[in-house]
Length: 202
Image (cartoon, rainbow, N blue to C red; front, side, top):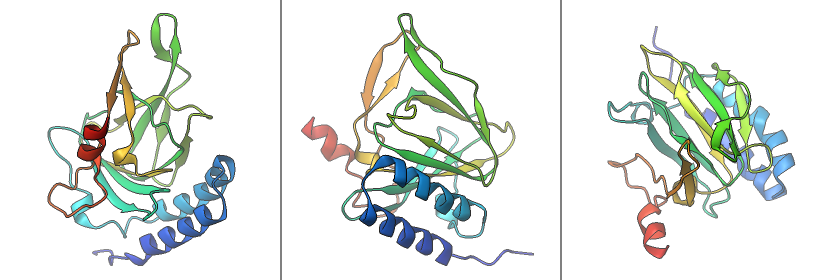
């Protein structure tokens, strides 16, 4: 039986998150109060529209679902094809990652004199689970689809318009490469994808 599409769940989440960022700009309460909001959203897999669930054979997809008009936060669906993963990277802002479908593995990294090395055990996220990242808690990791034969989807909330934030990719030898991710919403009008204008202003 087809599960009825429930977009009201996302609207409610966005309303509650907007109230939260109106109340405080401090990271600790944002993460503490935002975590159960995201956990409640990803407990249900009936609200994400199909265009934001489509994988690419080339690389993982980062679809913008919503950007706060003041760019205080953004909500993104990450869609992982089988075997796809990110490079080691940072965020520079607080973030919450909630697993919606499938599973993914998050590997934390720390800088040493020899370069970037594993900073602790990897975490396997399953549907309904939420984890946090930030420059305070630990901001450098690598993420991959834990499943070799199916698509996985996670929902990310960041404390900025993440597609326009200057961030870094790190190679194992410590080399740092700046990047601005943009979004994968290529066929959808998207005024919040400021990656080109941000790059031009660098």
